[in-house]
Length: 112
Length: 114
Image 1 (cartoon, chains in turn cyan, green):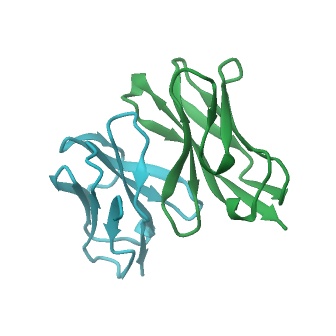
Image 2 (cartoon, each protein chain N blue to C red):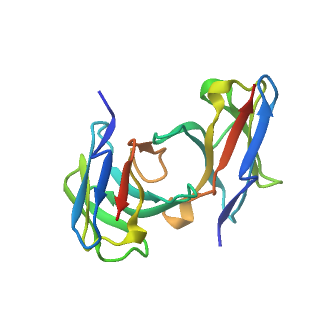
């Protein structure tokens, strides 16, 4: 009965490949996010969606694209993967802007 | 620019001792304040939050934090550390004038010595 679930948990791939990470929340929240956590545990917001509209798009490469088929899902697609993309990616949701975040358990991406 | 500073990337305490994790922020408007905990190989989970009202807030697992406006601080405490408290702790600030975007501290790793 996981509140925020993301798949896969681990993703190992080669440079230049394209990959996707899926995220689903069953909390009925209006806002979903993607975060990148580097090896030093620093958290960087990548995207957030509020009622299917992109409201924050930080300075991430356009190789990264969020896709939200509905309010409960926010997938992350990455084109032309690079070594520097290796990190843990977290999906999260909140009841609205300013609300507390509920995180998934992360996807550890390793690019070789 | 708004910022969040967590003093000490690593804090080590003995089991049963007081836990104190420091968080200071810079903001010109009243903030919402959060502490999150991340256990190994897991996502972050909310420990406690301050929005308005009582400045001493209690969270899960015996943790509490006090909002001190004059000191722009929101330090996290627990009277007696347990081995299971070993984790990474993140302080975060949300500001109305920045569309409630969360600003994160760099995290503090709490180490519990037996």
